[in-house]
Amino acid sequence: GNFTVYLAPHEAGSGYTLELLCAQGKRTIQNVCFGEVFLLSGQSNMAWRMSDNLEGDCGNHRGAYVPSADEPTYEQWLQDSVERNNSIRRQVIDKLDACEDEEIRIYNVPIRSAGDPVYADNEKKTDAGGSWQLSSAQSMTNFSAAGCYFLTKLHELTGIPVGAVSASLGATFVPTWMSEETYAANKGICQYGGDRTSDEYNKAARCYNQYIYPILGFAFKSAVWYQGEGQPQYYADSMKALISGWRAEFGYELPFIIIGLPRSGAYDVVPSGYSAMDASAGTLSSTMFDSREQQKLICQLSGVYRTVNVDTGDYDEEHPADKAPIGERAAYKVMDAFYGAEGDWSSPEFVSAERSGGTVTISFTNAAGGIVVSNEARNLEVAGADGVYHPAQAVPAGENAIAVTCEEVTEIVSVRYGYYNYPKLDRNDVKSYMSLFNAAGFPVDQFVCTVEQAQEA
Image 1 (tube, rainbow, N blue to C red):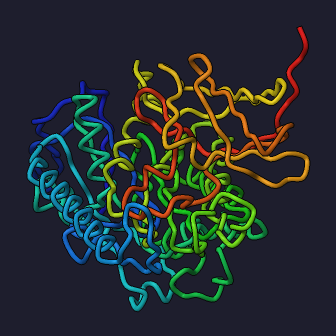
Image 2: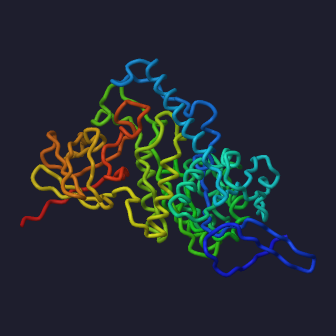
């Protein structure tokens, strides 16, 4: 059966022994850790295992080949892709080799198939069905890749034991992770990303009943949530309802770290030439941009934080193989949000835009050391009163700002950054699609803004 043990606070550490005494005898649990425990949840990108990068080609390359200056032939593009994939594989193998650590613990909630009879009845499970494991090359091979990089980096930064419970399932939408009561109370704003209400796999409360309900007794430092591709409309409302519901059901103000969505070109129609930043490129999808804007709105809730990953991703695959920066940035966000650690842990975010003559000065937070402008200010655009966007130029302007100009626009009224997923046709260097970073290397977050006229002195 189930039982609960209440203990006084202990210093973080490992090697403790817990003895449980009752009329039937004694049960001894050895090598107990005291530290921080996190809940990893969401869809396929959180469920993506370390082993998934050791199989296949680390990317399906479903997009049509388009020549570029760096990759003029298909053979060159293919060779660059192979080199990238091999590099990711080596990175994964090196990480697994270094995973032997008794102060890192992992727990995989077993995922059941849609054909399971329990699924059909949408029954609440009372036993999660998994077990705690020590971190090792063997155990981490079948653990969340983002979770592996998150835990190992956080343990390195804090020096205390860390653990994570992973409960994720691919191709799932927000309503299936809500309780039936939360869904019923918020049915009007819950977004499925399409008509999935009759989908048995994605039935409302299905994943909640199977994977969240059995672990409601855990006291997590935070949930780390990686999900949202394909749900740009009303996504923030859905997630706010889910977070509020989980907090009520867990019985405490469970913090959330939202994994900012990387870039994905899987839904883009690439123009025939290098014109992806002018008005003729209207066929490119802004879905990912819109989804990330929705993620920002979730942070209107207290205790909700978000990472920025706009410089990561994979052109042909919505499951980016390189999960290292994604997981590690979640660890940095923990340091920033929960420990108040000194240092540069976060991406610069837009604060204001002010026009003086033909120049717009854009200010940011988290710009210690100044904003670094690279890649010819790629993916930074401005528009005049006609609403037509043109590529802009930018130079640093003091420690926390850039000065933006554009020959085609004499009076700039709006600025946007990071709108297009792939403005440069180079599939193997995603970082080159963005151009603004802080001195610590964190990418400036995407934004769109209206420009204010500078006040005269």
